[in-house]
Length: 92
Image (cartoon, rainbow, N blue to C red; front, side, top):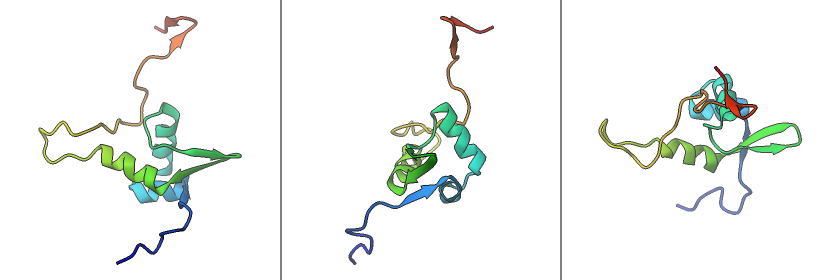
């Protein structure tokens, strides 16, 4: 069956729609954006939008077949992953 979206431009979702697509809260998606752990997004003026294929690619990075499967990638939690240097030093 042919793809009904063939030839159409990519579909972009705003944060609330993207969060629903992923099964997350909008706030969690915002945190992922802040910490750099989330899906690729685009800024159009003051708007943040997500391409459907970027959301699906981010979800697919976490695909596993068992608990012992290392998978091909990791979807990190929505929190700071490394300490941020402060004036050339780590904060205490």
